[in-house]
Structure formats: structure tokens, C-alpha cells
Image 1 (cartoon, rainbow, N blue to C red):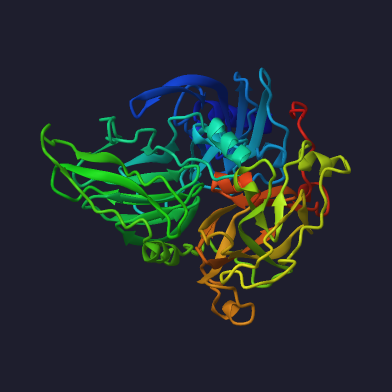
Image 2: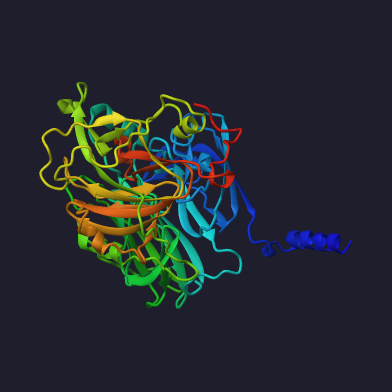
Length: 555
């Protein structure tokens, strides 16, 4: 009887005082709809979630289970990717079309169900089919468990800042036309801060305003949801203290400029320690090679409480477009917190050592302009999307969908960052690389100079990885590992590979399933700079992927 009374009291406490419960289920509904939206003084219908641009923020706590019912009310197929969520054993909810699921068709729905095991911080969600993520995106805020403080001073308030790109034309028409011609697509017409570009040529459009109080400290959760561009972020007259990158705590450091690639997130503390007034918030693109970009600067305003209406705005100078030293300094300063509570569990030994040569190239095309088509590849393989999801084919042993012979190294080594070889034609294929469960993996992402060297922000689904090294030129497997940081390297899910250089990452393959890795410049993904790891099941059900849900979309 006493045990029954205790059980009843515990149930009542859980109902009346939910703060006593460490983890819970968070339910969301995402209705995918078209909405007429005005930016840059012109309107067009765009695909949105719940009619919002950017979309709604998903809030949860570490170890919560999140259930999102996505209903497709548009004529286009849809999927949603929860960028940076580990998806431990729940690859069916990862979202990339034809990799882990078939898309949600018109009038259909799908329930994404995943647990935020051991994760806290800022991530993002976005569409993962075609170029829909230009407008279908939003923030994910994972708060620490109740009663667990941040490892930095508690902010007075938190603000979400989502950076993006805007095309006046329909984005799908832009990329479809480019693919038909075999050429790069038109660049965007503006950058945006929380959906707003600020004043622009021939349009005095509205900009984002961040309201602050003197002496207060704010946590800025900054998300780069841009389609094709790495960005600089600055606030005039203010220093920012970086405390987190890609939902992983970092050693704090101060900077006046944040460098952030598509798919990356950065948390920064901002203290309102300047005199009352208006201060410019600005974002501008980074590009240190000959590739065309949208060179527009988007602006907003940081406004102190008590600022008079007509007080002018204090301005700031953005880094030059090709400010490679600024990007290098920012990336090199990032370090994992590596505390007792949040250790950096860097693999010290490697079971699979891979080198991926990544870049763009050209193949013959009889119907294209100049009779060539621009494409992209990894290790000379330009990835071809299947018509059946690879995870389904793996789980049900369906043959003919993919092969598991993705090359571990470039098949024909050359001077990757020097003079390109004369024969740059690549092969097409739907190839994966197979990894045993719990094996340790090192991937050297080696940039190439074919057509033009370029920075590649590369995203790995299903895992965080440690950035153990980077450099300019060709990776030297004998000498470069001597300088690897195996103590406190930054832990991320997306990393920029420097132009004409390389980046080395390490991770443990402790998540069974099929996991996409690709350049997060959407144009490069479209061109084929992508592949997938197939991580085998381990021993027993707790090391195996869960069965597919009953409502898994059909192709």
C-alpha cells in the first residue's frame, strides 16, 4: 500500500510540477504552405512552414523527445532535415530526400520522431529537397536539462538571429534553368537577417531591430540558413564573446567579427556596454576566389532603450570580401570547452583513414552552352540521387539502388591545389562507404583547383566530428598529422574547408544507418558534391537502427 501511495504522489507531482521531470515529449505540427511574401519591394509566392519566413523555432531540452508532424499542402515534394541532430538509431527521421526517406508528396504527412540525446545548444531545421531550404528553414533551440546552468554567465535574454538569402525569382526556376544550360545559377538578390534585408538599392525596405537595455548581457543564437554563401557578422562598436559552435560549448573568446558558413550556428554573448544609441548590425559575404557571389550587405539595427527617434546609427566596416585572414583567425581560435562536464572525446587512433578530394569540374554535354556541364564530385565520383531511399534499400536488402565501393582515396592522385590535370571528366554513381559500428574514422577533406579553388562548408549528417587539423595546399600524410590537435579541437557538424587547402576531421561511427555528407553550398550539392556513409549495425538492438515507422513515405 505504501509503495502504491508513493507512486501516486510521484504521478501527481509530475502532472502538477513538470519541472520535476528531466525529459519530456515535445509535439509540433509543421504545415507546409505557399504564402505570398514581399521582400525588396516585390512579392512572390514562397514555400513556408506555417506561413512563416523564417519558419517557427523548435524549442526543447536536452534528452527530450521531439515529435513533428509535417503535412504537405503544396504541389512540390517536401522533406525536413533536423540539421545537427544526432538521430541516434532514428535515421528515418533525418530527412534528406532519397537518402533516408522518400519525400512527402502533396496531401501526405509524415511524423519525424527523434530524441535529443546528450545535445544542447542552437541548431537549425530546413527542407532537404531541391532548393526549398531557401525559404523553408528555422532555428532549433535545445536548452540544458532543468537545473543545469550554462557554462558561462547567465544572459538576461536570448535572441535568435537567422541569416539567409533572397531571390526575386523563383529559386527552383533559377537552378533548373542553370542545370539545363550546364552553367552556374544566378546569385541571390539580397541577404537577410530574420527574413529582412534592410535598406537596399531602389528599395528602402525594413531591417531587423535588436532592442537592448544598457548593462544587460544577451545570448545571440546565430544561424546561417543561407543557400550558397559563407558570411561575416558584425555589430558596430560591440565585442562578441563566442561560447558555442554547432551546439557544442567552446572555450570563450572575444571577437568583433563572426565567420559563419551555411548550416553552421554560433552562440555569442553580447553586453550592451556602449552609450545609448543605434548601432548597425551587418552581414556580408566571404569569397576569396573568382566565383561570383551576391555582394550585397544586409543590415539591421541594435537599439538601446531610451534612444531618441532621430539619433543617427553608428556604422561599422565589414571585412573585405576576400578576407581570408579573418576567417582563418576565427576558425583557428575555436576550441572545445573540454571540461569535466563537457569533455572532448577525440578519437586517438583511427580505423578508417580516408582522403576525399572535393571540388568542381566539367563533363561533356551536347545540349549545354559551350557543350559542357559544370558539376562537382568527391574522389572523382559525382553523386547521382537514386529513386529509392538508400536507407530503405539497405534495411530491406533491395539491390540495384546503390553500391558500397566508394573510393577511400582519390583514384588518380594529382597536385590537387596546383595546375589541374587535362582530363577532368568525372564518373557518375550512387556509391556509399561502409563503416563497421563503433569504428573510428578520419576524413581529410582536400580542396581542389579544377576550374577554381573554393571554400567548401561540408556537413556530415548523424554525427558531430572533431576538426583536428587544417592547412593550405596539399595534405601531407607524413608531416601534417604531427600538428593535429587531439586534445581540445572544436566539435562541429559543418566545417569550412579552406580555399586551396584541406581540413581533417575525426569521428566515431557509433550511429547505425545511412548518413549523408555533402557541401552545404546548395549549388555544389546539386552538382554532385555528396556521398553517404553506411554504418552497419552493432551487437544487439541497442546498437541497431530502429525499424521504419508505419507512415514512412513511399517513392
